Amino acid sequence: MSKPESEPPASGPESPAVDPRKPAHEAAPTDQAERAGRPGRAEQPDQQAPAVPTAPVAPPAPASPWAAPLASQAPPQPPPPPLPAGGWASVPPAPQPGFQPGFPYSRAAPVTNGFAVAALVTGLIVVAPVALVFGIIALVQINRRKERGFGMAVTGLVLGVVGTVLLSLAVVGSTFEFSGGGRFGQSAKGPAGSVPWAALKSGDCYNTPANGSRADPEGGDETLYWVRRVPCSSPHHGEVAGTARIPASDGPSYPGEATVRLRAAELCRTVLDDYALDQWAIPDGMDDIYLYPTRGNWTSGDRYVTCAYEDRDGEHLGTVRTDRGSLNPAQLAYLEAVRGFNDAYAEQPSKGFADASSEYRTWARRMSTASRAEAAALNKASAAWPAEVKPAVHKLAAAQEAAAAAWDAAASGDDLEGDVRRARALVTKSVPISIEVRRGLGLSTGEQVPDLRV
Image 1 (tube, rainbow, N blue to C red):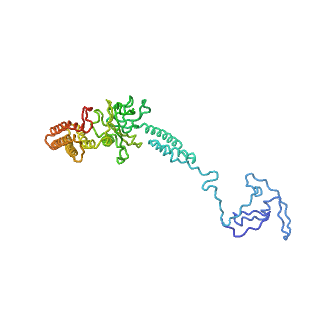
Image 2: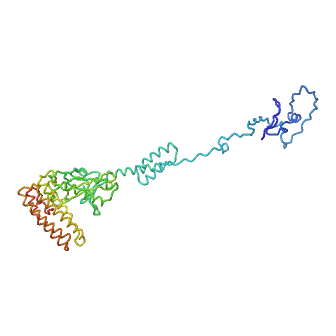
């Protein structure tokens, strides 16, 4: 509404109220209307105007109950507020804009805690330690922030606790495996006087107590749990040569049982040969065995293989150890000379000639190379052979030269099977010469071993 062009007349205590929302000609009532609307009251006369006699006023007619009330009958109203300085009526903002008083904004719904969701998910996918941590964090945040997800946090926490306990038990009860004897682990309690296999060190001799091992019902490797350490001078079944670690270059993931078994055999070959340079000193029946880690051991960081000699069926006295520290120069020279030939001979193919002809020819070429290398080492001028041993040493070298020619024929000839048999016969004929050399050098002659290893 626009502002009136003229100011309303000044009013005193008895001046009529002026409605600023009406036009100026309607806002000021006549004297008669004012006087008629205020019965029982008199307007103050103007002292400069002549007195005018007033006529008697007739009593008002009875009011109709349906008629609008007169101004004098309405309750007195407070004067309206003055117009704003800007000239326009202003409406003060409501306490909460956009809503009527008495209808406040609705409170936002509480959000679901993210760590509660993470705890539940990681618990379900069996990431136990992570679920345990996430569950604890979620419960703390839910209590402080008044968020949702309490049930998910508790579920994830429970799954995390259970999973962590099971994982701990799996690590503690993890097993090892060994070829030629199988896998082994540690049960809760061993027989009296027994120790876990992992407690044995290089040079220890041992026996397997009753209930110390378990056979695989499916025909696989046997599980060995406990052993009893005994002096090597006492009857025993096995002797530990040493350990070797699977290199980190093989990768962080477990490559599988078959791959680890082959890797263990490769690593243990050097350990066993260095521990027992003289293969003839190993009694018949004591086989090379090696223990390798299972998936559980691999996960816990244990990647060692243990190498040993063991005879499951019989007991033996003494040690098979013949390392470099226990040998004189002549003995060491002889054993180093024949070592390559013995290793090559032990790797002959296990299949028949018809099924593995190419493997036999490859093996024959290797045997030829090993025979010539042994002959050259025996004829080496720098070798300090005792005088009584020299003739037998040169005779053995000549036998190996002849055997090398036979192995050459087996590798490239037309009669593979016949050539291999002739080469083997030459090796057998050289055994008495080897015994003569060994006896002269003070080495084991293999009399305690029915099946000589050459």
